[in-house]
Length: 229
Image 1 (cartoon, rainbow, N blue to C red):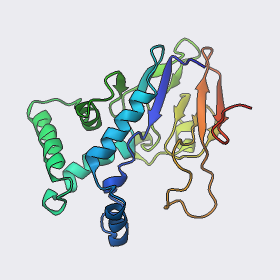
Image 2 (image 1 turned 90 degrees about the vertical axis):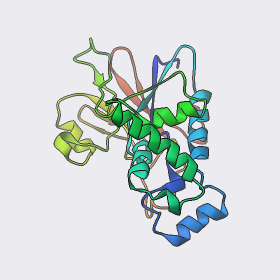
Image 3 (image 1 turned 30 degrees about the vertical axis):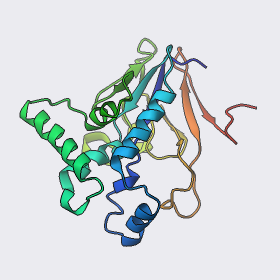
């Protein structure tokens, strides 16, 4: 399709130290048993993914997302002395955050720092929180692509219905389920469809939003790894 931009949401799952699981002894033992405790290794994998999808004719944009932000929460809340596997990497990340605060770098982005420190993501654009990126601007005001979908209007929780009331067309992610409401299109996910915590009937799908130059859009759902017959 050769898009001009490709937007990536939640590029870092942060499963190694998911804040929902750190107090669950069985979950954390499963991380230990499967050798999947290293935050640095997970960051490296995310960087390799970004490099693998890089194209000369396409700009890769990482939309600021809640899973990506989990790394920042980890730095703020974690006692590194209780996490020897990640202690040195934690201290390096914490130092980078503190130096950014000291130097007044309001636009410091921890995930960008981490991925580029791993030697990857050099050609990737990392959007900041609430940073706007409008495509097709000349077509009825354009389509906002800078929102992940976890933050709703005026500090409320995100959701496609809330975004549909804004009066601005937008493409969002977050919910892992494809949807269309008024002028808002919601993408699915590229992750596994069973992550352990999505119990019961699921609306998750491998669905992508395609935005055309004239500002029309389609949602393409992949089946068996194919986006078309």
